[in-house]
Length: 384
Ligand SMILES: *Cc1c(COP(=O)(O)O)cnc(C)c1O
Image (cartoon, rainbow, N blue to C red; front, side):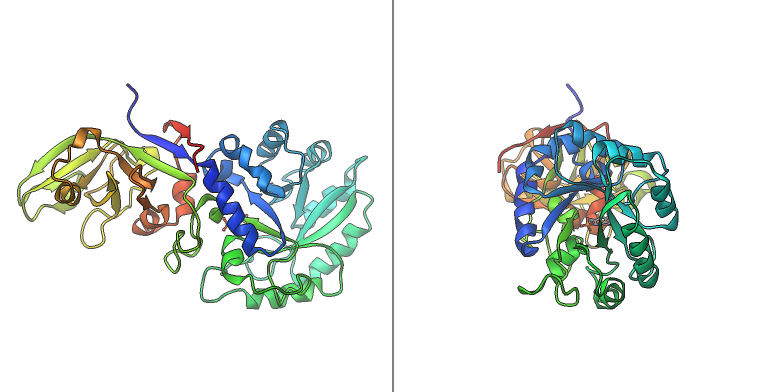
């Protein structure tokens, strides 16, 4: 028998979440962001529901090749553009749209020989200060692109640093306006947080200070059921469904006395007699080692749908859980058939969001989902 850990991917949840995001985006076209192998879910595993998106956005040329091989004929956007001049040939051959965020990429494009003019997204740095041209430089880059025979169409793009946070997006929209005012081209501004938090009531999508839905939105984490702004808002609060469940089983039970400790470093000490379960899941499966297993607010784990707290440090292949809550609720409870859900959906119907586990490990659900380890077997659950 294989080790009992398993990840379950729920494509219908992705489909549902795309619907939620499309509704919020008020008529904008939706890029489904499937970088990092669809945030750890597996591009192939969710491919069947991606037809609900208008385009696929990713970083890796290999992933772009894969979606073309799977039969995707719609737009594909390389979010970081090309990494070297010969990537442009693949863009021509596979009809990939690409971001231009740097002078070097302009030079490569100007020198590129192609039969087929490209669709590019010009990235404006409006304050994130990772990729893109400042507003004025963007205007000249736009003019240069428009004059190139290699270029068929130029759209505009920027990225928000604080769409989930108190600083918000207004300061970036000021810079955006400086770049795009009076210049033609489609717009793409919003990530998940901006789609959910900053899409305003119906307005003219061409006025960036009034709406951030614009022509294209870029939906990432929310499509997979993560709340980009947890804990201000929960995934359930946004109407999103978890697209990944990580589940396992108990492989041992220990009865502890007051004073006994658990795991490496003895970080947890029992204050009274208690029963703990040992779960076949550890950090080598992608569970965060820093999840809190001592003191107040320990990390929740679902045992047969009942939240039980993590105890002690997470080790490579195992973690331990206080079984008292489930034993209290279910007098005839037995450990050996119990379902352990680390995040996602329990068969009882209870949900434990990856956001909550991430919060307890001082990270974000993005990191947990992307870090699902290759050694974990994956199954697909097509039920809604
Ligand atoms: C990853 C990414 C997104 C998606 O962000 P989420 O917060 O997951 O919605 C959008 N735009 C760009 C440029 C990205 O790199």
